[in-house]
Amino acid sequence: MKDLLVNYMNNQRKNILKKCTQCGLCIKKCPIIKNTKLKNITPQNIQKEVIKFLKEGIPNETVYNRGFSCMECFGCVDACCPQGLDPMLINDMIKWDYRRNNLIESKYTDPKDKNSLHRIISSTQINKEDYDKLLTFSPSSKADYVFFPGCNVYFQPEKLLNALDILDLIGKDLAFVPGLDFCCGESHIGAGAIKEADSISRKLIDKLSSYTPKTVIFWCPTCLCRFEKTLTFAVDIPFKMISFPEFVAENIDSLSFKKEINKTVTLHEACKSAFTGLDLNGARNILKKLPGVSLVEMPRHGKNTSCCGSGAVTFFKESFDTVRKERMNEAAETKAELLVDVCHYCHEVFIDREQKYNYSVVNYVSLIAEALGIEREDKFKKYKQMNDVDKILDDAKDYIEQSTFSNDNIIEALKTIVE
Ligand code: SF4
Ligand code: SF4
Ligand code: SF4
Image (cartoon, rainbow, N blue to C red; front, side, top):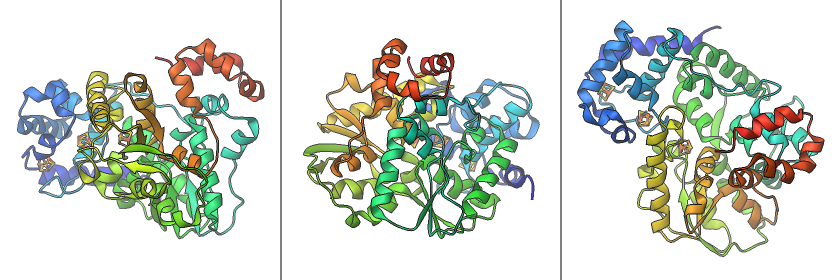
């Protein structure tokens, strides 16, 4: 069966053209609009241009700004449109049309590439044994659960090692399908490469299904949302899905904590998990069970949470900066000692500005690991904050000696993580 996602998108396009009343509600509710030039145009007029573009394919600045400023926060996917349409999918269609009509060159890093940044950056933070572990599939056999980490967490491999240790301690019948060779296709969708996303996502679904699991556990909030809110309508998916935080929260009583954290924390949840309701309380319930953790909520939390802005970083950097700053200031107002994030993307953008605030930024999985007595340094944060390739090379020399990548490749890759 070919082109299932492409067919789905084509059918949705017809549906949108038939049903969209151009009321503009989806644009009115979109949090990025006020940080772009679109703030000076009425939502109805923006949508009028968008629909005209979907029909006639003639590009203009308004359509570009609407499609490419989308942070893919999934905030408008459910229950925003009175006609039951998915407005985020309209933005995916704009990007698709721009790409296939050569109106823009939108690139993505292919994690499958043997010299992908994911692999090289990962190899500078962990030893060879751990690196190989993160790329080794469980032997083919039946398993109740499959754990799939996605691709981008490989930039921050200590989180994935912590997650695997936690799953070992929980002790369910579980298989591991590494990311990189397999991917959910989200980066391709975000770059408008729908045909590529179609085949990539179906290869992943086939691989996950080969273990005949009842449930697949997703590390990455974006993978889970893309599966539940797009792919599931296009492709038959023969398993249930759950987020890693929800799974850990459900099994937390099987973990024996050894260390008191003794900190006040505030939580930046993965916005899309909360907006879609796919995981409203997983990380929150974990924090409530960690010894010595006192949770202070930000005004915007739960269904009313905020995005970190990272989805707009490539095309709308200034808008992204504003969204991030608002969120980090909101965290500062709670006077918490730690800002705990869930998604590795949020982590990446928050650690870049951590030194401007009186709190530390930590990922929830690192905090669980710490409470369990597992010690692993957040090397990605350390390297980002060093912001100097020579210093990173010096700190990483023991790992680089074991890395199979050339020095030139490593230096070029490290340049991409310094500002
Ligand atoms: S997904 Fe988020 S950023 Fe994108 S259009 Fe919807 S609300 Fe706006
Ligand atoms: S809310 Fe729905 S009907 Fe209104 S403009 Fe957006 S997509 Fe069209
Ligand atoms: S990084 Fe986190 S908060 Fe930002 S868009 Fe992704 S899931 Fe949402």
